[in-house]
Length: 287
Length: 287
Image (cartoon, rainbow over all chains, first blue to last red; front, side, top):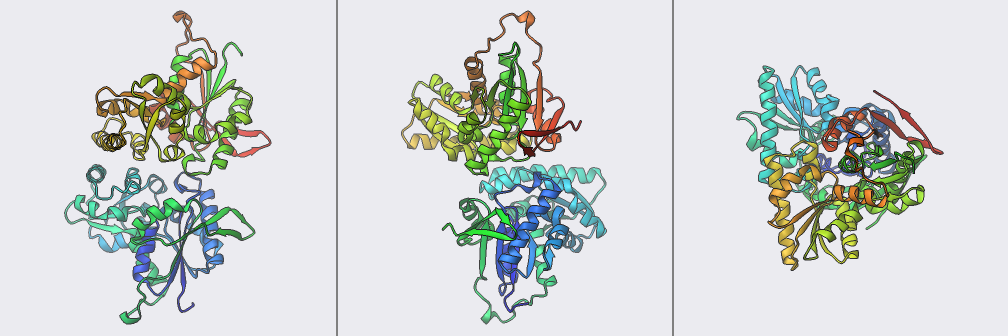
């Protein structure tokens, strides 16, 4: 491992910047390279084979072109459907968001019953339910397809969004009760949802823990990648180095990305993945 | 023209089924073939060149494989960015949705000022503003990105949707007033929006006409394609023949499609457009 290892972070879009943000807070001595495959999103409607191919290409770009020594797959769909293909494609440690989210639910739940909210594609994969079951948890999943568009519209603190969250959570808790469950934890199974955390925490039943899979993945990365967190505050960098790449117009990425990252994304570089032939990428700095 | 000509209807998804519905009501003696390029949606985030290639492939499928003698491009993005490419690719009359929508606004407006609501991609293309300007109208466009997800969630008669429409229309009419406009017509510039027409009509200012570009396109098709409407009610078919095709999983298409079409879509056939080589399509009946 180099003294300041590069951690590659991959997403189909820019929601994964919430995972990058959590990683940067925990591992400020690392360098980061983020790739959003925005030209080919959404992954959710694509076949497993196509998702695996796209995600493996993205992982190879981060490792071969950007020198990543570790990879975090900050995309629920790719974590659910392509983690093995990515591990086959690169020779560095790879971590997804789903298993850390399930592990955090296991640590946070007393009753063993948990709720998961996510996109349609993630729910249809039942990846969270399987990861929870492997840890002895019962999980009930619900697709909340309006939440991503509400975040992208910027309505993260809006009465309409609060009402939509209330409706979804009422339906989910009623279904859990009908199944005889007694849930005490809610997993945010989508990288857009951390921006809604304050609203969601106001709407969950009293005593229910809200578990952010983005934070859980960052904590797992700090642990599993064996990167020592800084203890000497005087030498801690103010803000770690981070380079962002996207496969389509960087304008929307920069405009929305700063909301997810909690700071400006900096200059985003365009990567043409369609020109990916024999490991050659065409990287164009369009700014 | 054959006695019962086939009209091909193309969309990137299934929203264009609202245009098909309007066509079937006006031209029950025709046969219809609808293709939704669901594997490659959304078109809105793609480049003009890619959209033109995809839409031209779809048009060729409808003409060459399904025998369409007329084509309606029931997709605002493809109408805005690919109409010329489609006309170059096929030898049959082709009609988009944008010019008929603008023409209906011209016919419906007294003041010459009109409002247009549409998706982000359609607004960014400014295709409605240009088509309106060519007819001597002033148009103010607004992207309403939450309306498509609300329709797809099935919340077409829901208080949350009414509130979202109210917010968007308040912002739009305030902006129009700030620009010194006096609008008296609102164009629904997205094929999903006809499902929200009852809610939208409740929220528009008194005296403002709501103009549906799906209906306008169907009326223009009946006129421009020279197909005589049935006048002899006794010989009018109950429901015209219609075959639907999609390029990805037909399950969501059939489930959501019936809402847009106002009747069941029937058996939807899967078309593999990625296997489109030298004009050969692979059509698989998966039901």
